[in-house]
Length: 387
Image 1 (cartoon, rainbow, N blue to C red):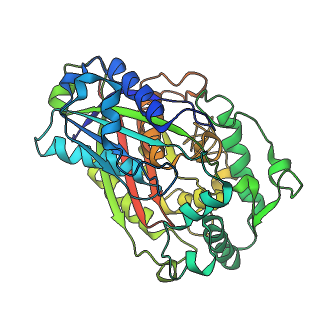
Image 2 (cartoon, rainbow, N blue to C red; image 1 turned 135 degrees about the horizontal axis):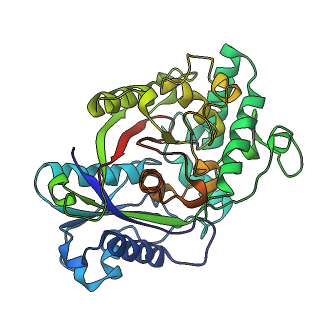
């Protein structure tokens, strides 16, 4: 066991007047209190923060120290890996714990996205592509995943209704998540229809197929397993893996997510389990087509048959393997730097029985798949409560 989550904090996701600094401070203090540790006990700090122009500050690592004077003089590092930035920060902290360079680590993921225009947001996010082939040619991230959807539809048939079912599932789950940006059950018919309130963003993707632009933050305290044994609770990361693919989409099979498949296989092998052993999954549904392809990449269905896990009910909250009981990025929101850390918090809450109305039945193992770009940076984790 490489590291254990022993405490966490999580802000509400949405569009706020709060500054990046205040969001970071809130979740840092919450995580320290939840873990029952003093700021002085933390050995090192990692901040997951994409930025790219959302806020003026490009040097943000020491903003975490503003949360408590006891963090002064702690080494603090900003980590960035597109939409997988939060998990990249988590994995960097795990590396330090495994190397024996730290006993306790603080990881914060945060993003303030609502302070710039919609056009500016689109441009910032597009910069996380292979710019000369994609952003410079006018491709946005909705456009990138629309091309992925088109490739899948050409190969396996029109699955617009399947995407609508994923959106409806995740919005229904989000109703019970007090941290979610959108807590509204939109229903299948609304998600499956094009309307003034649900327009086409980039065909075949509708507005309900796209995740939300959000502000928010999340934090975890990680401890070496030996240290976690003396803590009040411990959720151990029993397996984890990172796999990066080529940056250009032109070098991918766009009807499959090969990077996530490889990361997932490695994480399961490290944890010594199979997907059938898991109790829940938190996956990167930046667009509904991503969740559909992840069903297949993660081994829940054969290629082209991801819709079957919806028809069977397996991935619903009362099913055999709930996927995104938090509402996922689709309903919870997607503040870039916070997302991967939030996924780890949501999974840990479930395993500790502290997820409130989101709680699934008697979970024992949770899986997480967070990806940056069009399945370029892929991070997989398996979590198990040990205390």
